[in-house]
Length: 257
Image (cartoon, one colour):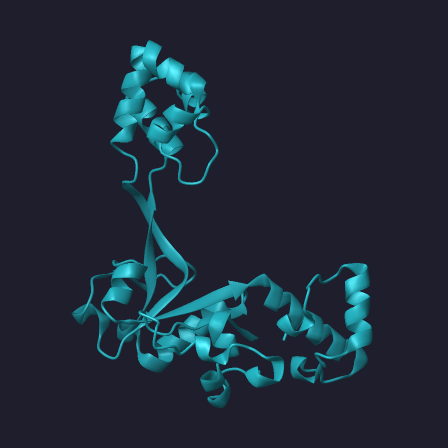
């Protein structure tokens, strides 16, 4: 089961190419947003697949274009404020309790830095200015913030190239999934996009898996051949029921289309 999200789902061009089955004019969608001269980057189609079949899709792409032409994309995990404190404390041989106490003083805000933590946390600032060991711990940890700690495989990104990828970018083997021979780029998303390489997003969604299993159960239990395309998007009684029972909460039902 495939779903297309974002501006691509409303594209008239993709509808004409049978990538989607939604006629944008019928639902008053902004069809021109996907292919727009004002966009600086290449058109990008985010495709959702069942999470239990995503690897199957990637294997199909590899078999179609060749293993030398397809690779998943690397991501770099960086050192955050708390992780920097914990790692430095371990290296300095400090007790776990003391290091943990300082690390927990870092406010729980996304992408917060140690410098910002000292400004926002009075207790942390006080310990920093009165305890030499804590000051050394935090000052050393500041030097590690933002550095790459580990690598992993991007949850969705796959790059496809006309020429063998090893002639264009550095590659490495990935051990993610069951195929240990799967190739992964050593460049992350942004450099790949800047080089003009084709980047596809193959996302795995559990929602699609649930929908497909539900459809299969209906077909097997009721001897039907139900397709999602057979379900009317203007079935007002059921839409009213969904709204009343708060199963689906949308202000405009045409957005569901």
